[in-house]
Image (cartoon, rainbow, N blue to C red; front, side, top):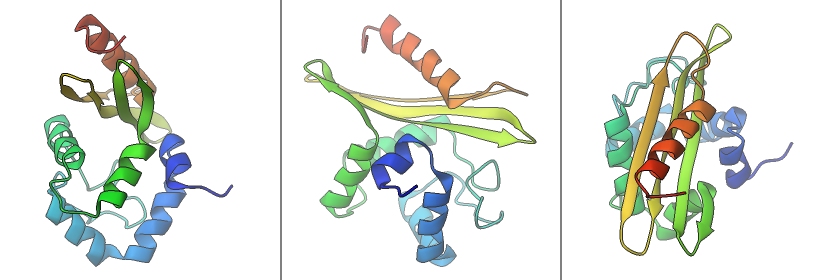
Length: 160
């Protein structure tokens, strides 16, 4: 089906991002990875899957650092582009604040081995950043990482 940035982010539509990569080209993407300091900046894997359990790696701390820079637009990108990305990962907004997040699940040989949930919460008083990563031989999904994160955020009285 046709996709927008919002729907592709919400449903993790890999082909959408693969098509953007093709249009941009490997050299351009590598330049951006270096500019924003994304993880190990390694695109040596297959160009269509370098970010899916392949050569490109990032730690949870690096994810939080990247989200902090994105939220503050420290990259100097056009504000409308930063806002488009922010809007595409907005999960909830209320009087309590705005919750931004994105899940990811890495699959190898048919098994979910790497689950992510990253994001941040803006409240009137603070902005809280998080990155949860779980690894296992199976059942390590973004959904499971989300459950862990939500439990922690609730226990810390950050988000209910």
